[in-house]
Length: 108
Length: 216
Image (tube, rainbow over all chains, first blue to last red):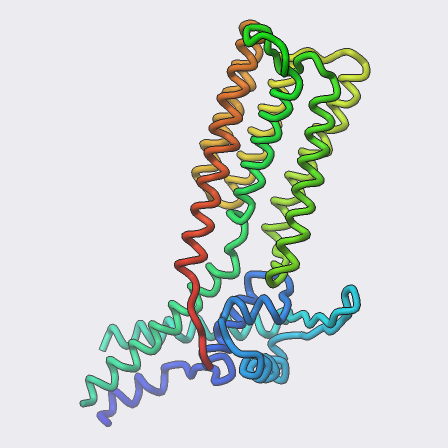
């Protein structure tokens, strides 16, 4: 790789791998628009399966990007997800990094 | 080869960016699902007018007609019908999550409904309400709420709706009682029925456009 290209690559930001997954990115983007959302609403909006959705939400929860609340409403279990402050920060940083990467792709 | 890989990477990044945009738009897709309530309340206003005037000759029709209970009974029935439908439809699909914008819009409409109810009940009982003022107050209140809602949602069609109601509020202050009823009926038709149907069509289009699976 030429020296100039190496320098550019070093300056480019890395994309957060936790957020980069398509479904996880979709979930964080959805959650950024609401105060909290039910599992069923997220499933309907992303048209994903229960298993996949649950697994991706768990990864976001482990990263501290979403908070989960489980409760019973009229004897029915309800799982609510909301984006944490750290999740919002991470999404903002991800979008900024994405734009910088795209900008550099257009420049080269 | 190197250029192809770069192009692929760029496409991938662009796809991520548009996924974020689509999901944010999807999450914000809320207000137009209330289009049917405009139609319902428009139909309720018209039903109240018909109910109040049934049996009277056409040229004697007024907003209140000859049955003082027509309006309160029809309005309460519309309110019950609206909540019954909301209850039934929310059981069938995933519950819409709460947003700050959604709560702001809902608070405005609820405040307007409560204001109308207490004002009209008090003014009606005290006998200090005439039919011109009745339509003017409804028009002013609906104009205010539609205007505020249009600014929050950045929805130009609703701004037009606010103008319809404000025009009706001004026009209702002039002319005869029957003429003010005609003004009211025109405002109901455009401000509730036509606008509500437009809202329902917009909602359907948005749902059709935004349905798509996202995989990890």
